[in-house]
Length: 380
Image (cartoon, rainbow, N blue to C red; front, side, top):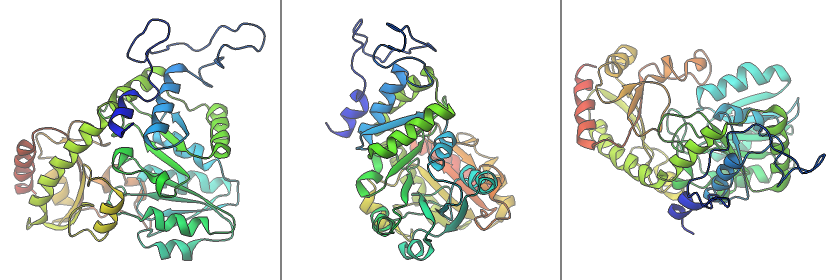
C-alpha cells in the first residue's frame, strides 16, 4: 500500500468484537488472565502492552518502512530510552544544531552518568568520519535540524558510521520531516525518533514520542527499556496521534505550500539577514534535501538584522501566528528560539543567534498568513 493508504489503515483493523472502524480507546490498566501467568493475547498490564498503543506502534512501523514501532510519553522520553542502549563510558556524536531539550538531556543530565558527547556539523559527512572515536556507540542526527533547518545526507553518514569497527547505532530525529517527507531507515539509519507532539499528532492536543527500528535485537532492547522505565503514553494520547496521522499527508503538503509562499517574501525582505528553508535555492544543502525529502516542509527560520529586539517585536506583533513553543500543528506558531525552546543552549557551543525567528507554518489561508507576516515585519 502507498503511504496515504497506510496512514489511514495500517495497524487499524476494525474492532473484532463489534466492527468499530475507529480504534477503540482501551482505557484500562490491567487485564483478566485465563490462569496464573496466562494472559490473553499477551495483555497483562498496560505499561507493558495496550491495544490502542499497539495499533499506533504498528502504524508507525508501517509508515517508516520498519518492522517495529514503540510509543513513549514524549519525544524526550523516547530520546532518553534510546540513549539507555549505550553503557557508561560510551561516546555519543551528535549534530551541532539540535533541539534545546535534546542538548539539555545530553549535556546536563546524561554526562553525569558517564556518557561523553561531541557536537559537530554533520552536514559535512567528513566531520562525522573525523569525530568518531573507538568508544563511539551512537551517532545522533537531526535533519532538518531545529532550529536552523540544516540538512545532513543520511545515506553518506550511514556508510561512514556502519564502517566503524564497533558499529555505532545511527539515530535520526525525523520530527520535522515526518515519514511522509523522509524515510531515514531506507537511507541507512538504525533508529528513527519522533516527537509525535508535533506533525504526527498535528493538532497541538497531545504530548507523545516514538522510536521506530528495523532490527529485532535493537527492538527487543528498547521494548525492555520501554516497559522497565515506564514512560509510556496513555490510550487516549495514542488515539489522538492515530487520529492525526490519518491526515498527515494532506497536512504536510499544505504546510509546505504555505511555507513556500512565505519563503519567497522573506528571501527578499530588507530586514532579513539570513533565511533557512531546505528547498530554497539559498540553502547550502538544498540539493541533498531535494534528494531525500518529498518537499521542504512547514518550518522556516530567519535572522533579523535588528537582532534580539527586532525578533521579539516581530514575534509579539503577529495576529494569526500564535506566539508559542512547539510546532507542527494545523495552526501557525512563531517563536524566538534563543529565549524560548533553545534557552538551554545559551553560552554553549551550539547557542542560537538571539535574532533568530522560527515559524511553524500552519494550514490556514496562505494569503492571510502572508499579510500577518508582512504587518509584523513592519514592526520589527
